[in-house]
Amino acid sequence: MDSRNYPPDASSLLISAKIVVAGGFGVGKTTFVSSVSEVAPINTEAWMTEASEDVDPVDDGTGKTTTTVAMDFGRITLHSDLVLYLFGTPGQARFWFLWDDLSRGALGTVVLVDTRRIAESFAAINYFENDSELPFIVAVNMFDGELYHDLDEVRDALALSPEVPLTTCDARDTGSVVKVLQELVSYTMNLQLSYGV
Amino acid sequence: MANSVANSTMRSMRVRPYAITGGRTRPRHHLLVETLISVPHYDPQFSSSLMPESQALYERARETTSIAELSAHLTIPLGVIRVLLSDLAAAEMVFIHPTGYSYAYDQNILGRILDGLKKLPA
Image (tube, rainbow over all chains, first blue to last red; front, side, top):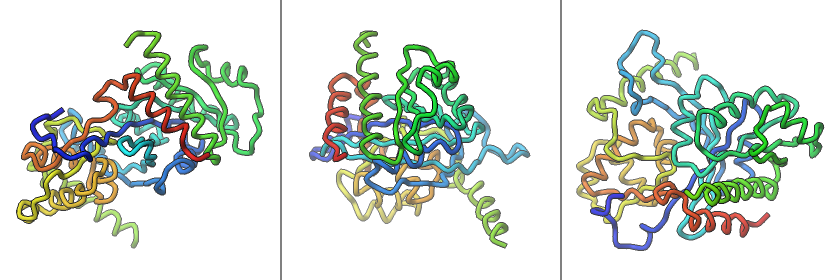
């Protein structure tokens, strides 16, 4: 960090952490974030002009270098000096390039799955299995409190590696969402211990 | 009608970001969306010397705020926020807080996060 301009007061000790909430369109990411966020999830039609990308932003005729993306995020103050942010990835596959940006610096990812539309989350699982080094767990969102398939069947349907934790949750329920977040943090801690990072 | 208004807003925003960053697209510091920014020693004179977007950022950051929140509340694209903040940081006018990632999410940080999650009211 920049030690040069390190301010002397105690507020400088405030640090942030990030968890990514991924999954397809309509699997409950916004609900999941709302259930635990201390502020209304900020649904920003964020102007992701990818100024940091290695592309020439000047008009290439397609006008595609500037994209409007709805991005949900929420915040949880965990300690007086530690704030956790939750970022929902844009559901649409065409915004994958943003996933790299959102994922960078995260402690891990929760991929939400709706078993009624399981294919919606294939892309997210594929991304976190193959294109990202972030620890991730998969949580089946039970919209009406019922699990229609056993987790083994869900694991098969998702072609999920055996080592990836698979759990259930009710995205509307604060306690349930917090439990999923705890599972992710514990998983990340265990990975670190086992790989000696 | 509503559509054409939206379109014209989009069009103007397409040009503006690079105008306000003077054409620069790369920040000098790596700023994550969750990175917190604060103003250690507020200087009203410095503030009034800034361009509107930088001034808005500087004012807003007097209360410690994340990059994503700054972008959302001020409706300034993340890429632009990063460049402008990195200038303010280079001038030592804002402080870029470390994140969990700065500590490589060591066991201590993760343990504190877990502990905090366990204390949340269910």
